Every structure is written in structure tokens, then in C-alpha cells.
Length: 316
Image (cartoon, rainbow, N blue to C red; front, side):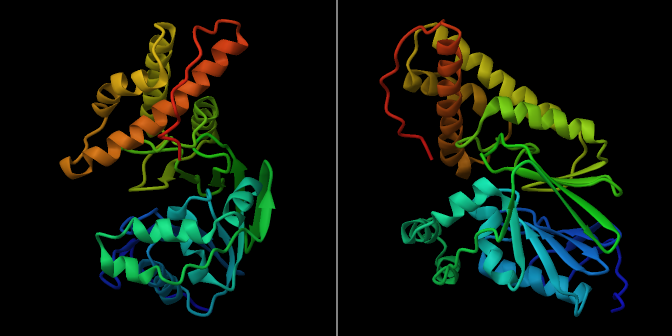
């Protein structure tokens, strides 16, 4: 099927332009939830993540079908199991979803309560909330443990488990094109979401990404960047770890640590006033996570300072 010729940026439906990073490799940075992408091969289309909001997911499918009419969807890769990356899977069927094995475990456990929480998160946006009345969870049909490789139509696409952001986080590497979809491992000018994080894994993932030789990174949210963006994320995580360790060694509890450090962390990236409360809560979740990491590390070294009796009210 011949492809309609396109420019590097193509405006289509008014919901946002798709951007061509290299021949046949597209993303859209205008959707909420994540930056989805797709890769054209002569045998069909391979997708990376899906928009969260149904109208935007349908729009993305229409954009793909307009660009490559008649081409089947081969695989849909979820870089993790979070709703912003995987809840739109239902709008791209029939298609085989592939993700890390832990993503299958998490998504298979999504209950009606989970769906209701998703709907309730849009209670101030009733038009979007109404779109979410028929959520169908599509867990991965195919899973992998450490690495997998897709070979279709002359494309080589590597799936690499890295963890860090979640126990299921993976990246999608195109070695010929030197493009890497890095999911939520890389955040540009934003506070990373760390509620399910493992910071030592995260730092290792950032180092691995730097070693790939990529020229373009596609973060899970926002515009593309270069591997230099990994350094700022690493600095943020290393600073948080160091300051939490300081508080822990000073005998501070988890809640005292969160209260004391949220202001310091808030200064790292600009935060719109209307999002300050949400970002503060997000940072506290990350601090909660790091505190427990430091506590375990100290106990393993035989340097435990105190037992923390605080409740994990910020766990996600």
C-alpha cells in the first residue's frame, strides 16, 4: 500500500500534530497521559503506548490510518502498566499488546475500583469523565523478562527492561535509527513520578540509555530530547537520596523527612501555581519511597539508626 507523502510535521484533526522523527517513525506530544508513538514497517504498524483519554486515542488511531491506510497493527508496546500509557489499548484492537511480565501482573489486577478511581480523577472535567464509562482493560498478550526483539519489514526494534520508574518499566530502542522511546525514565523540566520507583535501578537505567548511542530520546511525557537530558534526572534522584540519607542519619522519621524536604525538591523544576499541591503530593510519594530504600540499605549495612513507625499514607 503506497503511503501518502507527508511533511515532518502534519496537522490533522485539531487535537494535535503528529511529528515524524525519522522516515516512518511518528509521535504526538499533544495528548494527555503520555507521548504515544508508532513505527511503520512494510508488514504493518508497531505502536508505542496509547493515549489515556478515549477521544484522543481514537484521534491517534485515525491519524495512523490516514498516514498508512490499510496497514494492520502488529504489536502495541506498553512501556509500563500505568493508566497514562496503557488505558487506551482498547482503542487499537485487534492488536497484540506486548510488555514486561510485571505489567501483565499489574494490569490483570485492575478491578472495577481501579476504573472508578480513573473516572473520579476527572470529576472536574465531566466531558472527559463521560468518555470513561466503558473502560476495558487489555493486558499484554505477550510478555518478556529482560529483552525482546521485533523484526518486521526491515525494522529492528529492541525491548529492554530497565525498571526504576516502576517494576515493569521498559524502553524501546531502534538501533538503526538511533531513536529510543524511554518511557517515564526521562522527564524534561518536570518532577519525575517516583511513587513506585527504585532509585538505584533508575540511575542504572539512565546510564544504560546514555550508553546506547541514541541521538533522539522520546520521553513518556512531553517533547523529544537528547541523552543529555538523562543527567538532570540523575542529579535530581541523587540529590533526593543524599538529603533523605542526611535526615535518616539525623534520626528523623519518614514523615519528618517528607515535610522537611518537599520544599527543597520543589525548587528543582518550575511548577504552575494550580499544580503546586498535586506536585507536592507527588514529591512526598517519592520521598516516602526513597526513605524506605535508605532505611533498608542502612539496615543491610548494619547501620540502622532507628525504627520508623510512620504510616505509609503517601504510598500509591
